[in-house]
Image (cartoon, rainbow, N blue to C red):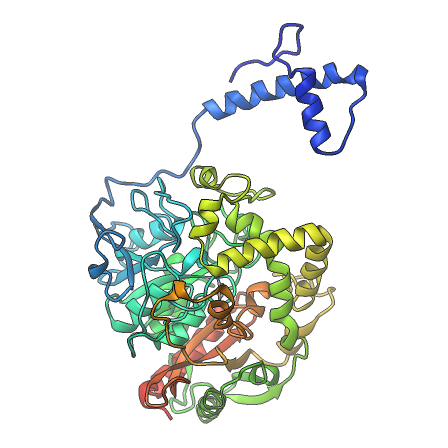
Length: 553
Ligand SMILES: NC(=O)c1ccccc1
């Protein structure tokens, strides 16, 4: 870095530059101050230039230990995408001396997770980014000897819940072609659902792990906020960003969570340390089942609250309603203490989530402005977005991303930070801060008030079954395309804002709305106390041991 001086011959801004700058902001600078500010800003710019000339600071991927070869992109060979599931495939050498936890498991990463040298689409052509780093969770999977076999398709800019918006093509439901896998982690849902991989990583800001998991008949866990590092993953909005597992079984969910959870020292949402033993999910799960002396009633002593408002969200399908009630009866017969509970604020929580998202989400998710954080910034990707979206980038977004940007411009212009501030407080009212157990003096509100009496809340993951994909999506207008998302996140999005862990397990099939002969998967959502992801896993695993979900009616 060079030494900057404010001497007579130091670089300075000309008076016209100061004038242009201030008049754009509607300000006038006193005539006798113009030269002073010109010199101050000129010196600043000299410092900035020295920083831009310096190297950036990223975690270095270990390409020698974990080489990746034979990269094949769905954009080049769509026929190799497995009906849309893959965004890219690769050959990864992942034999680690460190741990064998994931040995023998094949794993797909959602295509918003950075893997060095492999193009990362985020489901959209609006930005073309090839990362030079591995996300923390990718490194952790390699260090646990997991075999990464590629990147799974993701819906456009992670802003869609129906699987016909990705730049890599439509993703078909594992149980019926031309039906939705959900989104935005659509490829992860399909690939695990069809058995193309054992496990996948998904991302979730409003339901994007749980929606495709429910629709593809698999287990999806949105972990507690901050449990799994988001470092090196494309963000939508940092208060609601989560990454987590999508697996065939709850046992595998525990296994993958164990591999990826815990502080990485970079993601500033994470606590620096966690209670002893909390990350040993597989052992804790085994201990739970081994300690039960009544194997036909493994859930004896577990308290389950049936969230009434979770069954009355808009568009609730009667078949989903009754199937989930029956699944809950099954939990009762497994010994659980089940009672109805009410959180009146639940009905409106997704609406607050929706009004809160655009201002911060447009800036962070579409313009890549994450200022205020102390974490790893993806500088090379930030460079691609610019200060405002270009026409070209806007045109490449699907209606969900375009709508987010217009909502951002509209709400930012009309209400500014005041709206975002109020929404954030209302969302915080739903739940204590993430250290609620420690700070007992705080008021106990909404969900956490009820979670004092029960261990978990249960409700349908989604109000409606997967819908049909459009034959030619681009022939349909934004309203028609986005209408398919309406109400979808009523039971999922609230827990992105509160940060509670939320697991979806498949509980059977329901008829599609378009054709009653088409039967598609349906999930039950289990929401736990913060940091008690293990409670969700225990109940899910008890269900899975007792019931063959494909035959449950
Ligand atoms: N990223 C998300 O979680 C999401 C889910 C559904 C619709 C839009 C976004």
